[in-house]
Image (cartoon, rainbow, N blue to C red):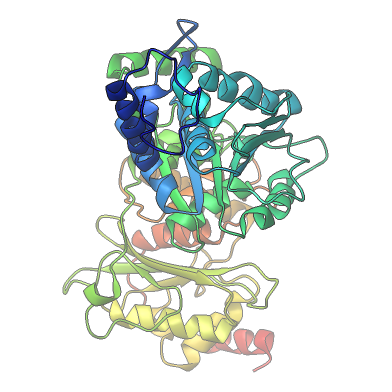
Length: 512
């Protein structure tokens, strides 16, 4: 039998193998080496939890798309619904690397040791055991076969750790499974500590994949922040979301049954949106049972939209840092501006300004950041001018006084709407905040609003029903700006400017 390729050693194939079969296997190896999707479809089996049997891994479109994402990006964050086979997909990709990129190290991480072991000892090794014998023979038998470590004959290895492990390894691939559910009693930043440990392991050219269903009990988790930043292009991660429809066998009838069961069992759709979200907005939203605004009201008024790109913005667009524009001003259309000012130092809350169409309640622009009150007021004025001299309703509390003073000093006093006390701006009290969120809730319930910003949507979804504020360590500046813009829609145009008495009070407060 001629030696068709030197890398196939003597004894690799059974004695009865003829030249044609040997040639096919050589070519098949090369096909698998060139294309992980082909390799997975042709030679990988996964365990069907329903049937309890191992079956060929016939990739769904969502899985194949994610596989391409993995091949092209060193950092990937995957937010998903349950039972979409993505853990199997990542392990199949790891197996492909171990077979065709000799001497690579793969790290498998999960929240508990037994779950990490299951990834390696049950799933990854199970796929290996069911591969064709000739392919396993090409690599050679395992030199180390333990629950936490698996070393193949070609020098590639897989290591399994709980979240506290993985230091001091240089890895080709790091997989963090159920990354949004990494939590321990008294420990708030498990994923952050883990990333500090494993991120340096891939700096020599490896990959890191974060995979998880959402944890509704932690709406501002690091995993969600990484996903949102990736979606906004603010970090180096590639992102992907797949909802329940990504599994081809699921139907609308199946989903309606899940919805009915969830409502009957819990009285809300929170658990449905955690396990089987349809959109990433559902996945990322906090639990709604104790929230001021029901999630269904918000979702019916939320239509995520890409903002206008710089080349789409018309001449004369204000130069405002962080300005996001969903719709440029239209002549003859009335707009309203809501604004929540803050102190503007590096540790203060954000100042936020939001513009809506008065007629439809559609969000057309917003910006947010840490701005000095005078700077924030000047940016508000820019938006006021651009959006057909839109009346403005800033919050008057604390640093809002300085914002109103600046606007009045620069000729914008007559464009400031007044609160219930007849004075310019909105004084937030327990009673007035309740009224504001009642107006917001009514508008959303009636469908008389259209939110485009995911930040605005998520902040509104997080407002506590009892305290009417964001949970600890979360922001509500954009929710307040939305509320003030909502109130402004129902107010008549201002006129007459700021009275001398009010002006004197503002000057006394701000020390002008």
